[in-house]
Length: 212
Image (cartoon, rainbow, N blue to C red; front, side, top):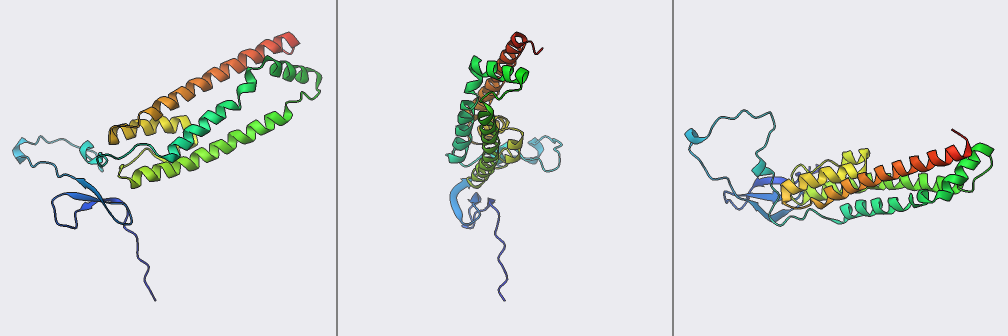
């Protein structure tokens, strides 16, 4: 009976060649990424600083030189956000609110029922896909040498929040990737504009129809 081999997780390990550097193991093989050892300093010159359990110096969290902060998964998340904005475009059509308001007063169908159902389904589908893409994005960053990337589970709170946190973390680890933060902020601004525009239109046509 063959004993299953437990895979060694991706991380920095002592260079098997015997050099004082550390070498990145991607989970399946040794890569050409190396981490230079910190210069030795006299013990007397090092001030004592209490650190919480598990804390790591910022220098050890730096990704290998040349590590990219972008990949196809994060581009997919951004693409879903852009496509999701298209689904709210009809909300800026005054005729939509006029029809919905008249339907609410008279009880007659307004002709937008199918649109509302499709919009809801698309919104939930895009949400689920964003969470899945965030997981693969997180795993891709980790396997490429980015230590402790922004966790994919934050995507459950919304793709914009994940992009903001991801941008901050990748910027500190790789020196790039801040663009995703600005894209996340832009999406939040768009969401706020859509919300208030919808509220104003709905309130306006509600007053005209006498439903308020």
